[in-house]
Length: 302
Image (cartoon, rainbow, N blue to C red; front, side, top):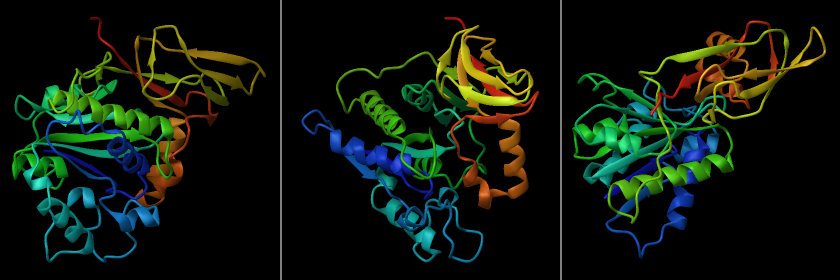
């Protein structure tokens, strides 16, 4: 059984829409086995449009850290427990769909635990993967895929789509493609996964690109796009000369972050987690001279 999970955080709507769309398009005549989908794991947070609920006193509010939950816990813990007891605990495969900021590339996030997880991670077909060493026993113990591996027998991990607070159609399509790839990898749909060139950002060397002057950044690509060395990824409307510069990639790689990154990070650090949602933005806007505007991860030759 393949378990699909989304909507743990109420501001991450792409996953909800992607899981729903994938189930609608799934041809049952081609399916071998069972798919159990939970497109909205945390309906209260989704209704509020918040990452965490504004009730449920105490620290145990982040559903993503509370698995498998418990029948006598907080509201969020009881939600997790219901999902765990009604399918996730019996899953053979699982995918937890999240969605981070729009200025950051979609990515598959997985560890080297066992000999089956890494091939599944790469089978996502996402251009960016984050591969880490096997998690120690006391790390990420409350993540749904980690619990499903350690307390159950599932092979699974999380992905991050791009963009929050609303549904981005391109990310819904991407999420559906990932799920289609993974069911093919699991032998539950016919055919082979489509896998482009990928970059492992845990091992790759990220290259920073900074603005040559004050100006307005106008991206020509989006995070997650592949760019060739010397290829322009953004146009900068300079405020000092009134002219425009093309900003080019120093390497063949994948754009991982794009936008007025120093400004965004500083604001997020100052205002804290409760106000970070306002910094989910398209990667355009005013930048200062020498501000970090892109992080590009190189794709190794071959």
